[in-house]
Image (cartoon, rainbow, N blue to C red; front, side):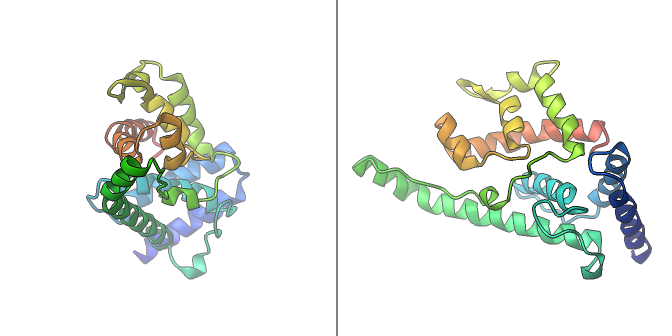
Length: 216
């Protein structure tokens, strides 16, 4: 394990020597992701894949430049430890947010029905600062989603809402991410409806493409 951690540290050092956005850095970051993917914390919660995706975005943004957080510092621990700490924080956010939504759904509906008031649900993603420029690894994902050569992403949509499809949601959730709260207001659909559809239908397609292209 010590030898593996040293290998990752060397790869990070080498990757950060190359210019951001360069093919050399992208190749090395992809190699690091491949090596670490099987060693990260795993659980079977429905929001795990969403949290994992955010972890990879965080890694690409902050391993060298610290675009949205602290730059990775080897003196504080291994790459795996750093990523797992972030992943577990995101999982905790999703867990707390889900419980909060479940606890307030009925009272909020009653309040809206009786007084016509509006409700607001806080999305933990809102607390993640947006990146002004997508990491290079994500450029291929954006091109794939925009092109949608076989029409599968556009053809996979929430029942009765062809405008709310996987192409639209994937592009809006790539950095800088549009929050679930804003998407809920834009499409006039509840956050659980949008998030559940995204996790069940969109994330598996995005992940399949990323794995086929060697991005994850």
